[in-house]
Amino acid sequence: MPTPRRTGASLVAAAVIAAGASTAGAAVAHADGSVTTAAESGATEQAKKTVKRSTENKRIARPLAAKKGWKAAQFRCLSRLWHRESGWNHRAHNGYSGAYGIPQAMPGRKMSGAGKDWRTNPRTQIKWGLKYIAQRYDTPCGAWAHFRSRGWY
Image (cartoon, rainbow, N blue to C red; front, side, top):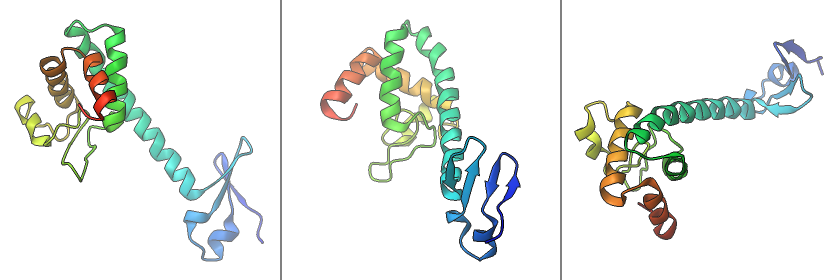
């Protein structure tokens, strides 16, 4: 078996690739001593992107929620609610119900009233979702309590 070659901070098992095996199973040894497969490393990169997107979308939502007079406790409820609904992913789509976006509007086109860019703009989705919560539940904690008791909001 050939010696693994150094690529950046990780070692790639060149023998796996040279043998014609799928790179999805290729072993990657990291500088910290941990070992993952290439597929796991790809999943890790995807997870990092998801966390970044979630963080960015929360950063958009925080001042919009504050404008409604909702303090930190309400934002924690909102954060939990939308984490469960969409993971704060503005492109989240439920193929079964048709729900879409961060607030999981059902159907997603309901958000068109907040902006033509409702499919791609997290700010538009957040504005729509905050208005929906305020009208239907008064506060994010009200929506979160409903979600916990019924599994939807």
